[in-house]
Image (cartoon, rainbow, N blue to C red; front, side, top):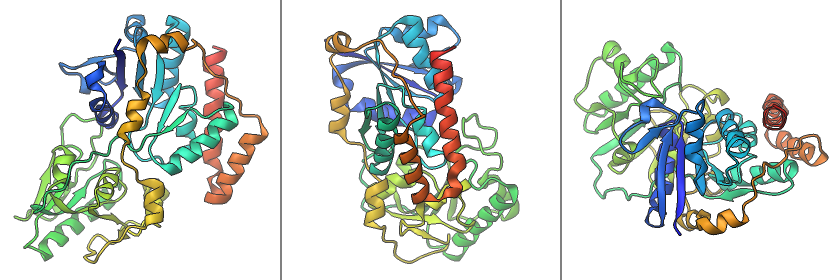
Length: 379
C-alpha cells in the first residue's frame, strides 16, 4: 500500500523545499499539494482554508503531512487534526531557509510535530537538546537543507558575477540606493564581465516577497543602465548553474552555491548586523566587500556545521507504509515542559556560547512554549 502524502506550504520558499523532498519519493507515494497562499494556487496546488472544517478534513486521510507553515499556523493545524478530526497522520515539520534570527523560537514552534527535519548539524544539535529538555525525547531528523539543489555548474558559465537580491536586506531606501550604486560601479569598472542581479520580483509584480524598493528601479533611476549589467526574475537554480561568483548579503541561496563548491561572497558593505542575518557568516571565510576580486576559501569547520545538502537516503527513511503507520501511530499530542532544570541548562549553554545579550531570544522561545501549552491543551 503506497503512502498518501500531503504537502502544505505557506509560500514559495517552503514550496521549493517541499518539491525537492517530493521528487525523491514520488515514485512510491500518492502526493497531494495544498497551500495557504492564493499566490501559489495552480492546477497542481489547491488552496487550504484553515478556517473551514472541510479544508482540514482534506488532510485527515493522509498518512503523512509535510507542513511548511509558520509556527502559529502549524500548531493550529496540529490541534485541528488531532482534536477536531482525530487524524493519526504523521506530521512532519521543515524549514524554508537558514535558521538564525530567533532560532530558539523557530525550533520551539516545531516541538509538537511527530518529526522535525533539520537543515544542518548545528541546527540538529540545538534542536535535539531543546526537544530532550522539553519533550523528554528527540523527534529531530538531520535531513540537510531541502532548498539546496544538486545540479552541476556548467563548465563555461556565461554569468561572471550574480548578486542575489533580498526583499528586506538591506531595507531602507538609502541603503538600497547605495547598494544599487555599488552594483553599477562594479559593473562599470569591469565592462568585460557579465553581471546579473537576481530579483525577488519586479515592481508591481505579485509576489510573497515583493521588496518595497526594487534594486532594478533604483539602479535605472539613480545610475542609468549598462550593457553588462542585467536584472532577472528567473528560477534561481537556472541562474546559479550559469554563474562563476555568487554574491549576497545573507540569502539562503548562498548555501546552494557553497554546497556546489562555487565561489560565494557574503558582502559586508552595510556592516555586520544581526538584523540582516549576516553575523552568521563572520567565520565563514567568505565575507568581503562587494568589489572584492580575490580568492574565497570557505572555512571547513564553519561549512561542516552549517551547510549540508539534503540526504536522499534520509528522505526515503521518512516514508512509512500507510498501513503500518496507522497501526502503530497514536492519536496524541506530546506535552511540552519548560519549567525544568534540563531546559535551563540548554538556555545557559546557549547564552554562554552566543552572548547573554541574546536573552530576549530566550524569552520569545519561552513565550512560544507557553502559547503552545495554552492554545493546544487549554483552549
